[in-house]
Every structure is written in C-alpha cells, then in structure tokens.
Length: 104
Image (cartoon, rainbow, N blue to C red):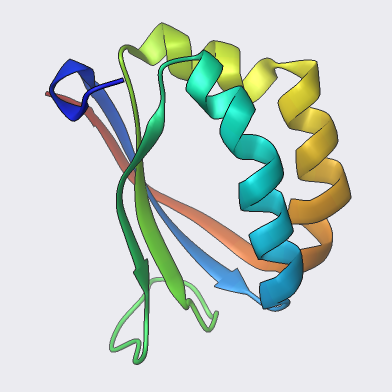
C-alpha cells in the first residue's frame, strides 16, 4: 500500500536483545502486515539513548502505519500474527514501549 494511504500510525521503541531472532520476526510478520495494508513508514536502529521514561536500553524505534485504526486492531489480533509474535518476537525483544499513536 502506498504511504499516502496510511492514516493511522504507532510510534514504538524496543530493546531488542537478540537481533537474529528479531530479523526472523520481521520477515515472518511482514506478509501478515501487508494483508492489512500496513507497513513501516520509519525504522531506526538507535546508537545512543539520551532519555526515556523507563529503565531500558531501547535500541530500535519505528513507526508502523495502517490505512485505519481498525486495520491496526485487526492486524494485532490476527492469529497468524500472534503465532509469529510468540515464536520470534517474544524471545528476541526485552522491552516494548508504545510511545504514541495518531491519525493523520
């Protein structure tokens, strides 16, 4: 889906502890994400964290975007996504922090 069709965005920060496992997660979840019209509009590996409201070594920040808030809810509840999350994300990521969400 074209970026101009994305109307709902979530800013997320992670502490990824196992990079290879996280890469497997991203590869496995991408087809599910695409089915819901979603994608990553920004994606950063963080070299130095200056400030955060939680005690974590946040090292990955991204914006995941969808055509609507409803598409986001359906994606995160999809059994295929939940299986990928359990298999790859949960062992690889130590901390997840949803920073913000907004409609544009």
